[in-house]
Length: 430
Image 1 (spheres, one colour):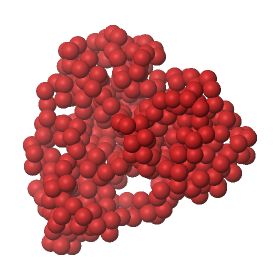
Image 2 (cartoon, one colour; image 1 turned 45 degrees about the vertical axis):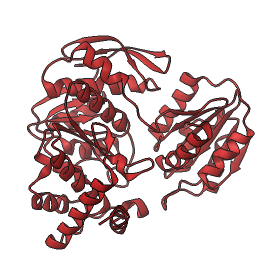
Image 3 (cartoon, helix red, strand yellow; image 1 turned 180 degrees about the vertical axis):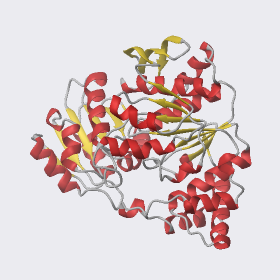
Image 4 (cartoon, helix red, strand yellow; image 1 turned 60 degrees about the vertical axis):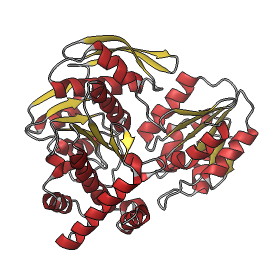
């Protein structure tokens, strides 16, 4: 099986990406596949990460800290921006096409042998576990795909279970309250897990505490960001963990929330080692962190910032960082497409503070029609709204209308950001 055949196999098993629906929640299929492979998900210790927002950034920081400490790290994330290979990495290098095709072919053979038909995500998750066992990583950093309890990644037995935060998202599967969502995310905690919680709401923390666990550390009580200031190219933070204070750590990522993510990541890695990290490891790990598609600067004069905020809490953070960290003083242009309620998204993005909104359709069957996104922007208070269905054409329209001092924000969906990144890199020559 070549890569094209492997991708066709995965596409044939896709359901959620096309319909937004998942089959009845069960771990039976992924558990059966893993058992047939000798349970590769247990081949190395696991740091398992869930939460409403910040998972990708936290996983990246954890990976970089572990690498700086000298470990070989297998990282599994979702979704991808441009290529599916991005989801499965060894020491932050994506799996190559040949290895990916080989792993998917093995899952296809298992389907024929066992009679278990996996979903797209289950097949890819099983392939990731198999590859990590084959290349003998020292530790796996696994990002939950959806919620937690019934997510295909939850066949691992997490040595460290991380919850970044809780917000209202995926309420069609777990809702309608944040308590309901917390209960589902708490499902990644096992009796042997050390738990690191970035959420600070007492009621939600209580949900996690109710799950049998080995130990628990909670932000603002056991660890925190002692100082968090704007710096050139990111943030300058003082991080307090249960063992140590790490002063003046530069985080090369934009947004105050990345300081919080850094505190969670550092505490998770300290917990994994059951020891503080050296100052050199901490500085090296954070200095190399990069999260494509999260407040990524993809152009200057005009400034072009892309952020894959995909739900109202993330959109609220996105707007805050854009206006408070980047501080655009000339015209502000928003290119937005979404899979969510467009009114909630544009309200969270503060569209009334933009001079122009260019609405597009996220390039997925679940994308909200650009006309509906545009109508929501007009209703919310933006005077100039344009409808340009294709995200690439929408960005071109924004660039053509912008002066060098203007600022363009591209956001609303990882599908939108993933579609425009190659175009913007070509235009910027990088």
